[in-house]
Structure formats: structure tokens, C-alpha cells
Amino acid sequence: MSIGAGIALFVIGAILAFAVNLPNEYVSLSMIGYIMMGAGVVVFLIGIVLLARRRQTDTVTRTESAGGAQVTRSSTRSSNDDLV
Image (cartoon, rainbow, N blue to C red):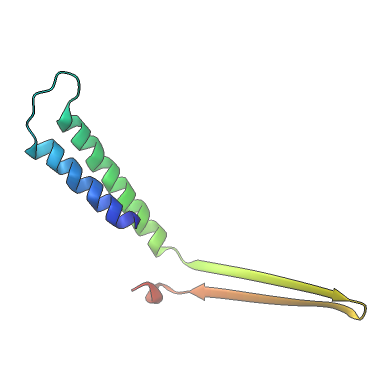
């Protein structure tokens, strides 16, 4: 989701920076376009970093009774090959 949002921000920013030529005294559309392009690059890079991170989930279940305690631990890891 964040990769697509980053690309969309970059494209909209490029359109505002390079294609829109409306004179406006209050707001510089080209500056807003450059800011959106920068934000799009940052969001895109964050999405790539989060996608490349290894994911891990640990679940611990503890059951205690009169006879003793039973502990069950489950660990799930997904490799980077699963993401492709």
C-alpha cells in the first residue's frame, strides 16, 4: 500500500511541478509539487524497507493446573522468498 501511495504522490507532485502553469499569488503550485515529490520518495523508500524486513510472530500459551504447568510456544517466520 505504501509503495503505491509513494508512487502516486510522486506522480501528482510531478504534474503540479512541471505541467500546471496557473498564476497564483498565494500558493506556489510548483513548490507544492516538489514537496509532494519528496514525500512520495520518502513514502516509497519506507515501504521498500518495511517490505524487506523479516517478519516474526511469537505466541506463548501457559496453562496451569494442580498437576503442574504446561507451556506451549509457537514461532512463525516468513522468509523474503515468500514476499515475491
